[in-house]
Length: 325
Ligand SMILES: [Zn+2]
Figure: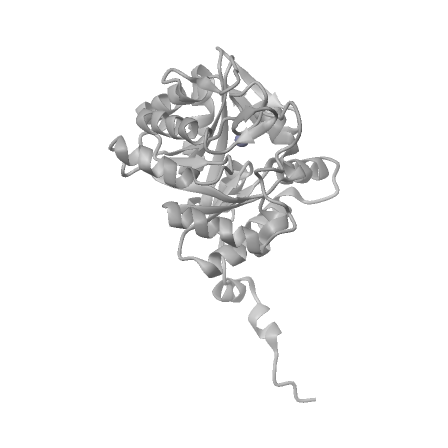
């Protein structure tokens, strides 16, 4: 038998496999989410997300030391305020929990890239991502509030602001507000194609941000729509986004690929809480090998075209990458 094509030649030894490997995961690809909560001396594990904690600012250093040791270079901050109101005023309070956390991080770890999530849902009493009137989530009325939050957190020292609200026009509005405040070097990481997903379940425990009525389907995208995702990506780029994002990650890798193929912008994907919780729960009962599953998920996101991966596994991945060198 004369076989012309023997692809197995490329797989004969670990070294040969290393030579022909097309994609890799690096610690430089990872962004680690952090939850900061108002109060003192708080370190509280999030029930549905093993090993992920809410920290008060005075306890945050414990986690920051681990991040530094792991070599992870970027964090994404979410805040849990004590007081919520109709419009989410705590979101742009200069003494609010995220602003204080940013100032603390930048004073102690100036090299750590700080990304501030921008949305009202953690700060509003109704848990929606925009202002409400007569049961409707208002678009244009929400934009100045998102811009105020962005300017406040950028002034506190955030390198990047990351609007996750899905209001139309917010990227351009925030860009103008940053520029008007001499914050021209602060970048925008746009949650561009963010879907109304059941994979966010555990996050709502973590950020105390479940909507008190209705759902988010009038602003987050329908999971059935890919062509519309392209329009979302296009419009955020036209408005001045520096990074574009697809969220969630694993069930939406076709869109990560579409974003990578369509635009010359760094593509970010968010490996969300439900994806994390599913891996952790299944590993805990011994049904899967956690390390292998997580690393396979990471490489799948890279292969699809993600440059950056926001993931709760970041510290584990960083550790495993070091072990395997
Ligand atoms: Zn929100």
